[in-house]
Length: 128
Image (cartoon, rainbow, N blue to C red; front, side):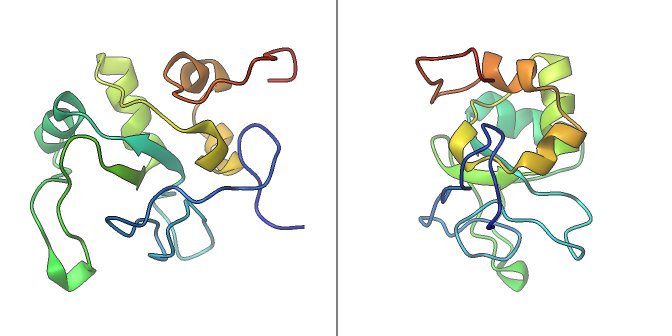
């Protein structure tokens, strides 16, 4: 069985423009090398990017050595569960795409917090 999302279905691609994912494969896949757990597919906002910069995680400045283009509001990006949770707690959470958010996120972030900020909430919430 392949990787699963927080809804229990197959993990769907998050974004390819820019190419996201710890493995730069467009998905929020994770594995042993991904110690930061880049598992949440976020649609970044200006407020989220500013918050990340304020906590020492500059997602706006390009860093070609890491194949990182720098993000702009509206980009979809696999962000770390811990940093997204901090933004959520501080009131700056970026919207998330549940179908593209890896199930391992639930080890760090409650499903309720993700659902609150989901841009792809299914019609039937009973199974969440």
